[in-house]
Image (cartoon, rainbow, N blue to C red; front, side, top):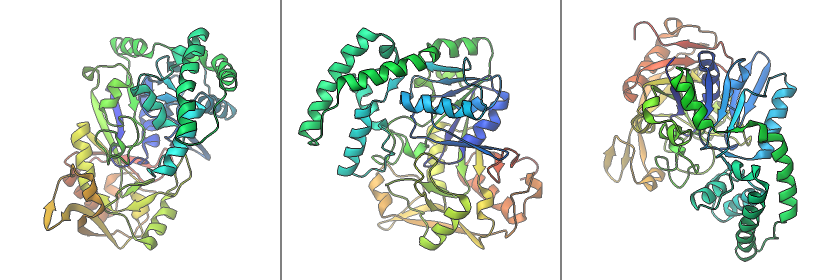
Length: 425
């Protein structure tokens, strides 16, 4: 296995958790490189469902080193809770987990500011404090794990931060101030529990590459939620694209051998923002129920729509995708007709590429191809050759429109419900 990055090629929730879990079998290190506990990767093993928000999915495999890289923002309370939950289910979490001492920490004021800001302008955030924490990071006033480990430095930085945040709370939000002692005491307790995991992960990962170890780097969210390449401002606050794998780990681009993009056989997104191929209410509810389209982190119902080839081609471009994985093909089994967006019409013009002017997406009219459904259960299919003819044609058409080969197809949530797209196409 080459050093591989797995990214979402739509608006997140593409099923990356399952694919990373499968690819983890061949990896030595599994690395999370951006985002925070606003992400949710779901893995189903037998009758057990694991929802991971910070810890890489590789933790479910024995003998793997799991790394939370410097590009991640960490809520210590959430991390400790996730460790405790995994241990309660019999999963070993100890020296196999490494957390970069350069990660920025999420504080109670970040979460409160996230919630208050969302009331003023609705973006559709999870309210977990991710955006405000990244804002502090970019503003050079954030507090990192290394700072928490140095008590004197932590006290100094927390006091400075609270002076600024409490002024904002008073003047902008007419909100009560945060207590230094309360936050300090709480985080001093967190320090005792997470200090053992803190280390220089950049050095560890580069040393692993030197020793020819196999690295699997997992992105959270999806390309269309990337702060630079997504549907701004309805995006996350980090680089969810493959480029984030380098900045979020300290690995140079030459250390990455392969980039895999994960897509659903249709499209979903959570929260606000334009969605050109969104279904009407009846089909929305049908697909939502069959696909169990509810957020793994918040439980919010996902918006569902037809496959949009323009956004996935955009993802292929900005990530330099080498391969595609298609998930949830089985969710389309009952549909008589299936559509694929191949272009947008806007003010009399036809656009075949994803536009830079995101405001256009509110008003574009998708140009659709219509394909016949297959009307058969694909959830038990174990190879491409056994798929219904129309399902094969649908996948081949997606492959042609994206311009990247499909490597794997998933037809259910369980580990075994996946197969390679081999044979004649």
